Length: 317
Image 1 (cartoon, one colour):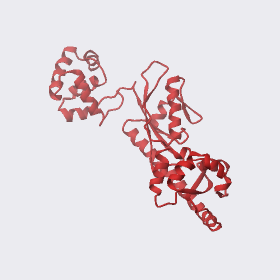
Image 2 (cartoon, one colour):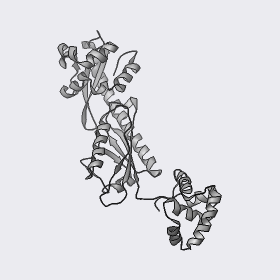
Image 3 (cartoon, one colour):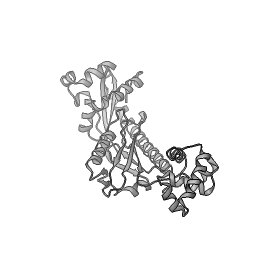
């Protein structure tokens, strides 16, 4: 909490330049504070230490910050600490301490509600992504799986497991990516986690993992949801809705069926076998499909159908 007319700019600097990860006073206050006790400047870090500390000499000097107060509270089963920052020369008084004690209960409730709001919003996003065909997990501030959709839970055991709440894989490359994801969840620094592959041990195609870092300046510093991890099973081919193909390109039912099989990588011969017709009939039908979709080659047709798939899908073939 920053008491200053410039609080927006100060907070932006505090987060953008990762001072929250090097805030010596707050980090130490969180370790030594006891429930119900209000800490002030000299009880946490000495004046001599401040003269050598980059946080005090750079960040605090830039914004004329020199007064600190802190207290702890319990949230999500963990101990957290507030830090109240004030201008230089505005050290806490006995009257201030009385005000802080009145404020603590309301601040604790506000933090609890804000953290719950962040978790519920992340779960809603995950469930929406699942409806769109993206099984999704939510990772919290410690890199632990706090929520998983039904589709994501069904993938557990296929190249990865959840041990003590965290993702784990026997494949070293995949497990390294999981560990990096934990570090990303624990950090609030700007930057997007990279996509990676979850390698299966049975030789099947891997699972594509696409993490997205949740950011909300109003919730920085609170526990809860930090990362949405979307999963795509590359072993599970999907094809566009036959109804969508008929509507979009005026294909017949059989032409739409053929287009669907080609979209998941089948050759004309494989499609013919599945449709129980001759390859010659498939090739003639394919010419009609090319004409109706304004394409000339199978690769071009598959690319077009992939764009249709992004908006509607029949699910697994």
